[in-house]
Image 1 (cartoon, rainbow, N blue to C red):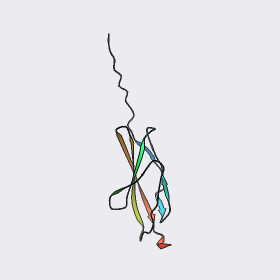
Image 2: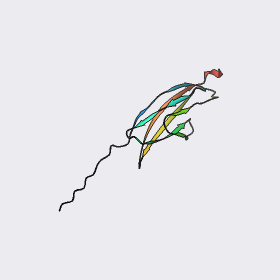
Image 3: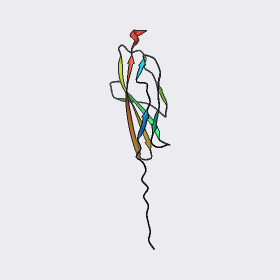
Image 4: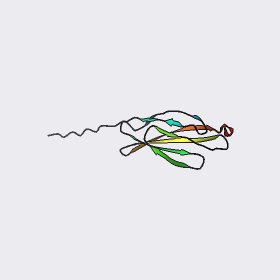
Length: 102
């Protein structure tokens, strides 16, 4: 009697897409959506405004805005997709125009 073991290889977890916007006006809300290579992945979002990563929220899509900036600001947005014991990340750069206070 021969016993066979079958090892099914799952596709690696990857973030397939991270939608725009990449440019916002001060106070304007941006909405970003991520999709991963597997259904059932959970999403955690972070933003770096020049002083390290801060937790932004969970789920997809996510909405965020930045008010009261004195000059145009470039921030980094990062999403972590998790499923099982795997995590995949994607990043985007977002420019926020200060509108000269208007």
